Amino acid sequence: MCRHLGYLGPERTLAELLLDPAHSLLEQSWDPTDMRGGGTVNADGFGAGWFGDDGEPATYRAAVPMWTDTSFPQVARQVRASAVVAAVRSATVGMPVSVEACAPLADGQRLFSHNGKVGGWPDSLAKLAGRLETTDLLTTAPIDSAVLWALLRQRLDAGEDPPSAVRDLVGEVLAAAPDSRLNLLLCDGGQLVATTWTHSLWVRKGPGSVAVASEPYGAPERWVEVPDRCLLVADTEHTEVTSLEEEA
Ligand code: GLN
Image (cartoon, rainbow, N blue to C red; front, side, top):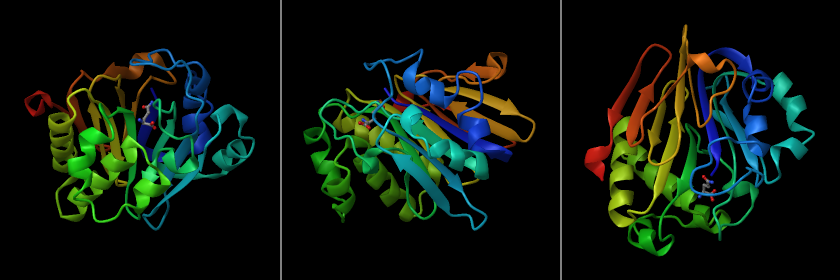
């Protein structure tokens, strides 16, 4: 299953966050150590997203193994950001390998990644997806993660706060598709909201910084594992982990 990462803190280059550390996201693309639920490598594409000075997210995504992209390291050494979401992808069986399917998915304000799969997709989500006004996204990226992202955006655009929107989305998706793996990651530039639902997630707090990742990178002793079936809400000062169990 895919590996993802979120960072908030002092400005770092993408290379410092994603390429240089021990067991970096780059290394996790070919040598992940905790792939629950299938897959041995994350070679179906990758993406990095960051927030610019104007507060808007930008992404670099490609439907190739991260280690084969010779342009990304150059970009990654130049781009500095204080809010980053990145992922390497192992496509769920039956889902296309395309750049549109690579996380992070973005709108003008937020970055989103999904590690896992929706059980029984697409039939299990047909009813929920039916309330989406646009199917454009699903035409360009007909994958479960795009449906989750569209449903989440609908909640956020309706004014729900990000932690509640993520918690409620997990609840309704599990009700429709109980056999789902839902490690979600959302960032608006100032806050990270992440869930664990049958995949690994670790958190590392530092002075004025926080990072979450499917697998720890850099110094291992600073990471703490987030329990399964939890919601994590973090900014550079505070981190809160609460149970999602009542959503099951
Ligand atoms: N189901 C999603 C996809 O196909 C996520 C896959 C994963 O976590 N391995 O992209």
